[in-house]
Amino acid sequence: MNAMSGSNLARLVPPKAKTEMLQIITFFEELCDELEDMINLSAPNPNLRMTLLLMRGHLEGRAITATALIGASRVPYATANRRLKEMLQEGLIEQRPRTKTGKSFSMHPSEKLLEQWAQLSGRVGRLAATRFGGDEVLGESEDYYFGGSYMNAKSIPPLQVLAEPLKLAGGLRVLVHGDPTFMVMDNLKRQFEQTIGTQIHQRAFSIDRLYEEAVRNAERKSSRYDIIAVDLPWVGDFAERGILMPLDEAMDTASVDPADFHTAGWQAAHWGGKPYGLPAQTTPELLFYRKDMFAKAGLEPPQTTDALLAAAKALHDPQRGQHGIAWNAARGTALGHTVLMTLADFGQPVLDLPAIAGGFDTSHLVDHHYRATIDTPAGLRAAEFLLELLEYSPPDILSMSWYERVRPYAAGRIAMAYGYTLLAPYFELDDNSPAKGNTGYLPHPAGPGASQIAPVGGYIMGIPANLPPERVAGAVEALRVFTSPEAQKLYVQNGSRTNPRYSVGADPDVRRMSPIFEAVDAMSWRDELQFWPRPPVPEISDIIQICGEEFHDMLRGLISPPQALRRAQARADAIIEKHGFT
Picture 1 (cartoon, helix red, strand yellow):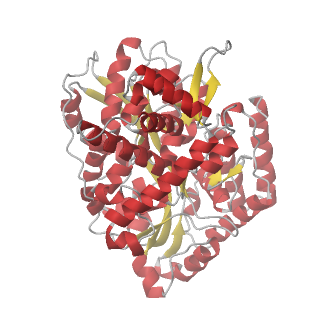
Picture 2 (cartoon, rainbow, N blue to C red):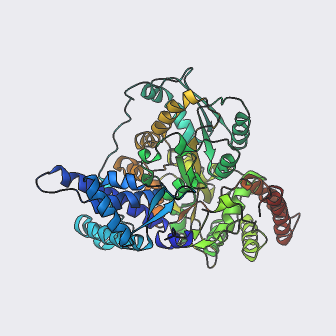
Picture 3 (cartoon, rainbow, N blue to C red):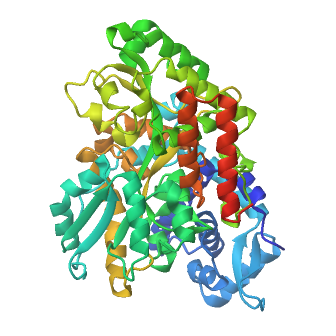
């Protein structure tokens, strides 16, 4: 029987269910370990053990062989082989040829097994919630997830030094973005040097200069850096141009617990089914809003674009130096990101991605069968929305970018601001900011017929493809340390407001630092964290720049919305055609 199609897989295993099933797999694995340690009471269950490995491999995108299944069974070879054949005969497992000769196969769960496991995951999750979740789980909270109760009570221990120092001549060399999270890492440099046993040399650039330096570094005979930070939309570009090393060629990615990363952040690190880095920061763009201003005006937090415009109008009072909203509107990269995210708010990606449950499918982008979708009815609604937003924005909005939009919000001059979570320290850590303690966090309000989402931004950390072989092992070990739960918790404790891991967001010490972590985790469990608004195709940086130029002319009144859409569409089509992708 052939392997299942991508559409069937998407239907059976949506992102939230995938994460919950991985948690339940871990629960079963640990429970089996405990039971089997009591030798006189329990013997290994080979069918369950093989099913657990098969499901984990499927959900994590790893190929599983018959030999691996037999090894996972923990029973004698003959017994395991017999049980494996029974599962094949029952239609629970499918075989896929790994070579042209057809003599070697990879093993995959069948549709029958996937359906059974999805049902089991739901039942076990509800059972755990009922028996161990407490009163809140039983009736009052819709955001309980399997394992959530015990995770909330579990505090991640401090970062521990490596047993042996890393062997990297001249120390570890890292290229990063100059944002608050990576600056926290730099402030903690001495502690990390002690942890890994070698010096750390970190260079930080603005987003555009970071891209240029990463590309320039790839042209060198040997990489100047052991690890580089990569903006999520660049993953496809860097993978196709050979700038990044496929991570599964350098390490066992299962060892970093992929299920612990926010699903959208982990998926965004992949191109063509291969991971090219580990999430270093998952920072969705949210709507920050002043809860005290809303309460005083009798306004509800906006869930729709119409409600957002109404709130912005009600709270816009330029005579008193107060404005309704701030956002990324500076020409080029900044506004280009806003355009793509606004398209998504109206239910449309910038490329013609196929719709799936909970969003749009990006798994086949590596095939290059896509075209731009800018000049559309949804695109026109998005353009008109931005023009309306302009009316309730500060007078210098068309020069505002990443940090400029949040600084006036922190100063109390703005009622709402679109901003990445990494920018929250500007007001959360400022005792003089009227926004401190008065800020609510929402996913993007949605246009008519669309669903609320929180577009995922952030960075992965990957290994340059031209890194000398003798440095790869040390770079991999440092990568593990920098992205570990212990390190991520340390970043938060020192001012970061980004976090790529569920375990860190559930840590009680972290939750006390800011309400943003609980809010983002809840959005993730509701499948609101999505990375499809900025699909990581090789042309995405050019498309972002194009949108940032054409829509800026529109906002300045130089061209009409239909003209901006037509011009952006034509330029995006030309870029894709130039690359030979259709």
